[in-house]
Length: 373
Image (cartoon, helix red, strand yellow):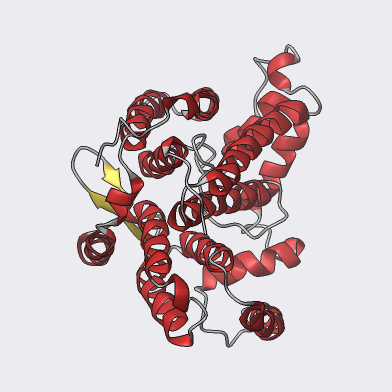
């Protein structure tokens, strides 16, 4: 469990911790700008950040090999939590995604991402020599599909997409043969375009009506002005920040455009950043995320074994997809979907998930170097 004598603490990545703290503090400032007088989102975010950093450091001391030994137990616990969400979970904005734990309202789907990364990495490590076996691929796909489906019916399409992206990246990094990858691409790419066409049709049954409207609205914004309300105003808010942002342009008392954007403290936190910090500040925030993703990718390269490499790839994919989609939605280049921006958005579930991922990355870097086959 703890292997302090084997850990090389000279490789403990304090830079990663500092970047996460910096993003968390920036997020706290942005949340304070948009919270109502009767809300305490700012204080909750700071408390979540402090507790999250402690959690990340604590997890970083746990050998990830030890954690992965319980991959089946974690998988079953995850399924139980998702089933509880469906049976006794609470609904917010027509989505049943949360469990009321009295102290906090927790979203198990955020934990699912971490558990499935560990589960898939362990499974591939055990079956590494049979990775190109169709039955192994089918087994893994079904194992991932079950919790993904339970999340999808919450309804939580965005988190389901994150999990699917993580799985695709991990299975590619696992060493899947090009003899399998190429046929999948040749069949899959046309299927994706066909699926995109299908969900636009009146007779489609895959998406809820409001989800279909979000897809159609990005293609025909003038016909779905009500659906595009958030994104239209988000784009205006980001653009109004211009180069340096309103915070540094002596306009701190001016009314902000992000005040009329619903859920600006979470899904649209980047619109607040764009208006307050401008183009330069927004680029710096994106740069900080890029460094986190780069560190995760370098960790996968330095990992002492195959399993550690896959875990780091999965975590890098998780951060990469969430950052791209969140900013893509805020800048109106992607259909509106509710996905938090790691460490910036308000929400303790997202903070816990992100900090667990950071802790695991730190532990992989602490491991003694070995020759990886």
